[in-house]
Image (cartoon, rainbow, N blue to C red; front, top):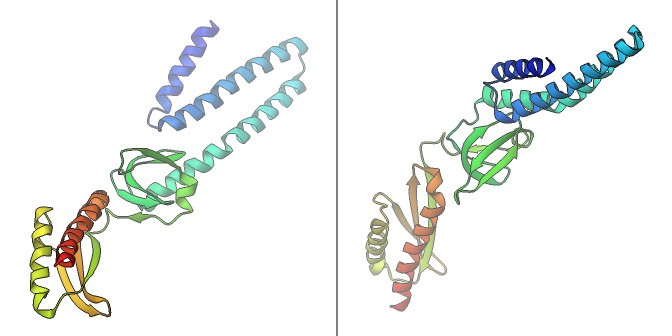
Amino acid sequence: MSFIVWYVLGTALNNLFASLPEDSRESLRMVFTISVVYVGISLIVFVLTMNIYVLLGMSALLLGVILYMIKGFLKDFFTRISLLSVKAFGIGDYIEVAHYKGRVIKIGSLYTLLRRDDNTVVCIPNQTVTRSIVINYTKTDYIKLQEAIVLRVAEADVNKVYNRISEELDIFGYKRAKIIHSPTQDGMRFAVTINLEDAASISNDTSNLHKALNIVKGEFIMD
């Protein structure tokens, strides 16, 4: 009989909280299990003693234990609600928070999960997220990627450098890069700006831009 009651209550609990994240369901399931066991023990003690004050005392103790156990859960739960209501980021957004960059794959009751550029997953406590500055790269139309090289070239060779930089950038697929030059004490400075639409590729694009400019720099140093 007790097994049937336990099964029915467990099934009802799972159905009731089916829409909640998995970590929330586990927390509530643990509270439910401890509560049922404690109520069972309280009833047994009451039957043995037939003392209503014992039952009331144990009930009050149970309430205190439950409130203490779910204190952290409720705090994290309302933290998650605030994250979702503010809409600073959502599932699929590429963000930077607490020194981590990645695409949001889950916003749970306790943690926010990011998939980083190297495909690893980092779990950041929601309370840490709410206390940190969040940069949402997905919310921007594009991201500017900039890098510069300094070459000792004459003014007459500036167009050569422009053409070589454009050729190398074309190889990597950067068709609409902006190139400007300005004189410095160490030589002519060539600055390249690329507008990226996907922040998730920034690591790869930074590497490609660095390679392209180093190739051009090597050619003109040799000359």
